[in-house]
Image (cartoon, rainbow, N blue to C red; front, side, top):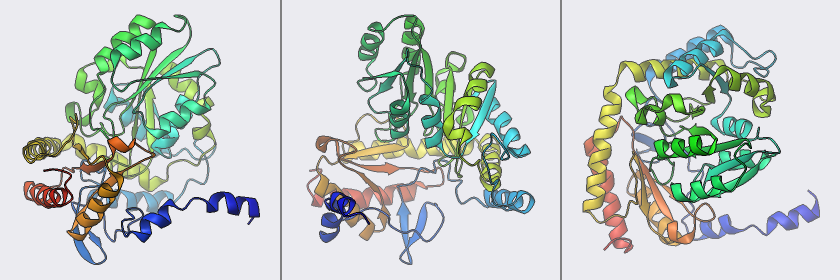
Length: 395
């Protein structure tokens, strides 16, 4: 390896320092599916670190659909959607997705990250992109590739957004990009207010519903449906690695927008298409979500229960409105210690530390699945309360 590169990257020693303290929290191997209880080092561990909100990642029906797709189509499309990688099941899934979110058309990508990268980056030189300060990294990276000028506004602050919008030409192309549910804070974008500003200042709106599909709206249709504003949103994107138990992503909108995206989005055109197994699993997951609304009802029942319990026991959970609970620690070493101690007690949770967040915003992320029971939620909270009190995170 080049000596200069060795010296440059060799200066990065933070992982080694944390490992030396015995509190390294990443790349922990799991030996089973993403269920409420997983296997780690041969023992049962309660999983509260997954994004499988509907609990479908290990569902036998998704597995069977994926197996049947492999039998018919093989393991790969061996090319991009643009060229040889479009299967009939891609088109069927896209029609289903468009109906699900109430749009004219949809197109699938290999990952949700690639959706945001490939859509947000399409901005023109005379345009502007407006980002919530809590937007996902994929949105930020897409904006960095765009020719448009990028303007950030304070999280869910409509006054700040209005101020930014008022400072640019009315007739310039403008795109506002927000998450539906924010993946770390768990709160919901005030979409009606954002749309009012967009219409006032002549801007388009894109909603990243990665964490909202399967959680918000009628039968899990997402944030726009939740607020009854689907017809006012220009673009809705989502991922398949969360509620839909697979891998991939999509964006939906009208025919004009999708025609441009399908012929200009580089992360779509120059990436291999979703493998058949992933496509079939997503399609089956959507069917189950629509046929079993009790899944979402139960998810919200345990969410409301967990919210009450966390507050009652003195946890700081911020302003969450969803099955995502940020447990504020505000200290990196205590956070990593709590994550280690929780795993020792049979509870899997995930840390969010600098540089992802400022030091005073360090959290542990606790997320629920529709397949969790009330008893499992209580057991997890009981164990975390003891750890948090021992570390004096809560009094």
